Image (cartoon, rainbow, N blue to C red; front, side, top):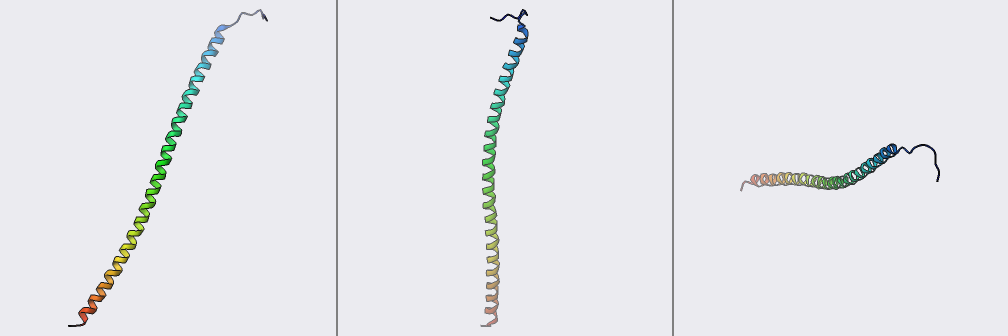
Length: 91
């Protein structure tokens, strides 16, 4: 056994032990927080993708509505033209 002739300072060792325990606890809390944040990120990413899909559907519906309105206007104009032609017959 090696003897140094100095008394062992257990107080310093106790402080170091306490700091290590605090550090281990802190690392554990940080890992838990990181796992929670990763889960939140995954949920937010899924919600974002869902919102993008709904937006794309809405844009498609908007384009379809515009096409239907144009078609309605065209039909209205043709019917109007036919009615004018019928009135012009003077039956």
